[in-house]
Image: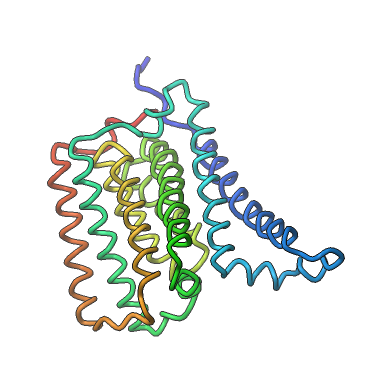
Length: 287
């Protein structure tokens, strides 16, 4: 008989994702509805709680922050609950373990993410997609924040959203699927699910690239901590830069098309150099 550990069951990962997805979608709608009900005038609940009102709230700053909070809590809650069912310690199961040069790896991954943002901006502008989807609505809602609003935006969109998404996608799902299949297959599947969760073709295309890079980084680093740090840092910079910008992105396309790939290549190369010694990237994964 072989002493090799059994690969993780696939149905548990599928169930965890289904619970996460349902919690985000249903939880967001319920939270927005409760927010509208709390603000409704007595006797005018029907007027306040309409489909149009919920949709309008969803594209406003309060709605975006509430949705981000629901998504964050769902990611953390489902990841911790699913990981706690394993006989292994939760921190090991989610790969929340220190790694060599973790801070430098996080900075290198952040550089790659910034480059992906620049390249994505260039492509969407070239295709005249810059005003389509959810990203323009989010940017408009975050523009010109007051200091308290910016602090709240950083706390929810920058910190908690980054933590929740990394714990669930790279910490729980990728750990299991990379052990179930080959690491690159698990990373591709998780990145696709991560992109799907953004529910917008333009935003999802960018999220797919980011998910692939973060997954590869976490496997190379043998830890999710560097990608958690990179995700939080990137989101925080996005909130702050969007808040202080005056209008449309007017950076020359040629600059974005050069700077984006250069930053991506430099960031990923730095990650590879900092994590030298990893051959396959899956020998450390819990089963």
